[in-house]
Structures are given as structure tokens and as C-alpha cells.
Image 1 (cartoon, protein in one colour):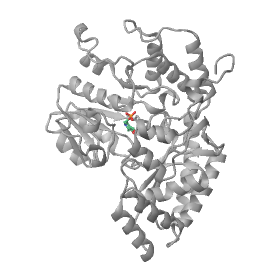
Image 2: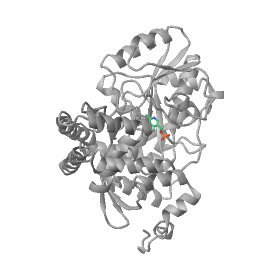
Image 3: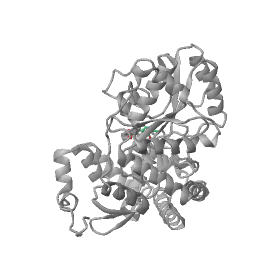
Image 4: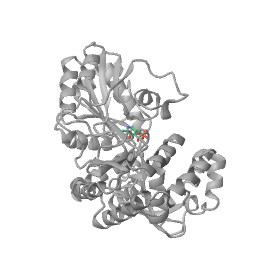
Length: 462
Ligand SMILES: Cc1ncc(COP(=O)(O)O)c(C=O)c1O
């Protein structure tokens, strides 16, 4: 609000017929999916891990804006920093200057990222960051090929998409960037076979896969992969877009294995959910090979990259994360949530595995043993691969006001990514609700399977 407390018409007077207008002018297919699964709400307020809709109903957010709201929605100190910056009439995007805010944030990132990662290039999204990581690796090594992992996801711009698995994202968008090769998950021999050909710029990988279904590599993989890559003059580029900024209970997921990658991509949780931002963090040595002389001083650049609001947001987020010990909270509360969910696993035969680190948790469903449930499982999966997961997220939303979703392309995995500020209240509410949904899910026939049938009938028009 302005100083006179007059509601700003730009954002307060447009809450009527939202979905009609959204459908008419944005994405009517997505609007229809939201309507079918009962997610067609209009949220008007948000704080911490909670959202409120137009009717005043309160929702618990275990989606976290896809891992964006790590410090909780509308954190007072992040908000205040952004307001203060706006009120200062400061100079942003001068372009022909060494931005003081970029310098400050880059210094800070050098402190919190591992080892000798000390030089930053600022971006505006996760996908752009993946693209820049690929470009840096190719130019620094002067090698053409990029390896990526089965079920990996790095974004949807062309470089990122060329290194992302799954037809759901790729169908119809080819041809892709040449030289991108998918290798099997967690298989060091396969990595060595490709890398020893001598033409590999980098392996681009998520230290823990997000959209692939919260998949954690074996403890040997990352340290050994780094050794193999370096032995052949290739680089390790890690995509920490989703896992970074405390999500897994460490500042960065690679910290679980104590390694220093050559290139690190970060974004999402970096600026408190307010301003698009991302960064490629690398070593000075690699940076110098990319920006090789003065005539290449701007060979990779981005108009909005390093914008003041993004930098202020990220600096405020880091300050809040440090002072409120948010990484530690993610580790502690995540361990509690994980163990309570794992304790339920043996009682529910549709739950195959509960896994995760910190507050990045995946609940994987699998084919059950008992005959009736098995028949239902098969029927649903034959009809639509994303349907079963919705049979869990829909009742959670409808009956318990908890916002969650399935992993992007491993759709039998329910992925939890709440704000990292949650505590006992949120964990208790979630576990109680989840248990009730699992009890209902294991009644066949029952209301959740009826819901599945309804979704199935309607899905003809998806
Ligand atoms: C690991 C990873 N990399 C990259 C991206 C792409 O980020 P963005 O949607 O900001 O382009 C995502 C998005 O979910 C992601 O999870």
C-alpha cells in the first residue's frame, strides 16, 4: 500500500472471473486441469507456510512455489529490504558499471558455496542458469559434449531441455542441441565409458534429482564422478537450482558429500520468492577461460541479470537464513517429517518408499500386493500416468487444505517442498492429514478410487 493506505488498483481490483479471463488470455489448458483437480482457487494472502483464498480458507503450502519460498512466504525482513531499496530511488541496471550489489552478493555466494567457487554470473531463471553452465563448460574445456543423467531435469530453454530427460517435456520441440548424451543413473562405469572418449565438456547433474522423483545417488557417485571427469579434462557442473539454499538441510546438496564441483547453478530459493534471480558460480580459472581477454569481457551477458531488486532480495534471504538458522531448521524438521512418514510406510502397501534429505522429500507409490488394489493400480496407470498421484494430492487439497504436487515427470512420486521455516504445527498437520488420505486410498472400492474414476472420465478432455 502507499503511505495513504489506498489499496492499489493494479493488484486489488481484479479478482472477479479470474479463471475465465486467465483462460481467455493465458493458458486455458492449464486452467482446465486446475479446475478438474479442484485447484482452481484464487489466493489473496500468504505468510510463512500458509496461504489464504478469496473465501478466507487457510491452506498449508507444502509445494513452496516449487522450492522458491525457502524463507517462508513474504518474510518481513526480505520484504522490508526490497521496500527500502525501492524507496531509496537507487540506480539499477546502469549496465556500464560494476554493480555494488552484484559485488556484495557475489562475495557472499563465494563464502557460502564450497571451496574455490568464487566468481559469479547472474541470471534470471533456473533454465537460463543451466544454459550458461553448459556454455561455460564447453568454452572452458573447448570440448563439445555434455552428459546428463537419466530422469534429470534442468529446465525448458533449449540448452537445458536438451539435457533433460522425459518425453513429456521434449515431445514436439526437437531437434535439440547436438552433443548432449544421456547416461544411466548412478552408474560410474557408464560415465567413465563416455568421458574417456575425450570430448566431454561436462556432466550436468542435479546432486539430488527433483522432478525425476527425489532420487539420491549412492554416496560414492559424486566424489567418484568428479575424479573421473577431472582425469579426462572434463568438468562437473551441478544444478542446485532446486536443491540449493538450504532445501536439503545443507546450504547446497553437494555439501552432503563434501565435494567442490567446477560449476554450480543456483536460482529458485535465492530471493525469497519475490524476484527472478539465478547465478552460475564457478572458479576464477574457469571464468578466465570463458571471458578469455578484454575483447570477450561481455561474451556472456544478460540485460536483467544482476538487477538491484534481485540482488537485494538474495542478500536479504542469505542474511535471514543465517540469522534464523534456516538451514539447520530444514535439516532438523526434515529429519522429523521424514521419520514420521517412513514410520507409516509399512502400514500402507501402496507406499513403496519415503526418501529425502532436509525438506526435499519424496513419497513413492508402487504396485501393491493385494489383488483388488493391484487391479485398481493397473487400471489407473493404463489410463493416465499422472492420475494416481493426483488421487493423493486432490484429497489433501480438498479435504485438508494442503497444497502439494507430484514430481514433474516421475508422477508416482509425491514431492514435498514446504518453506524451510516450518515447525511442529505444520509437520503435525501434514502427517495427520497424510495418514487419513492413505487410509482412504487403501479402501478399494472407496471414495478416492471414485475420484480417480471421475478424473479419468474428465481426463478425455485434458
Ligand atoms: C533442477 C532444476 N533445474 C532447472 C530448473 C528450471 O528452472 P526455471 O523454471 O526457473 O527455469 C528447475 C525447475 O524446476 C529445476 O528443478
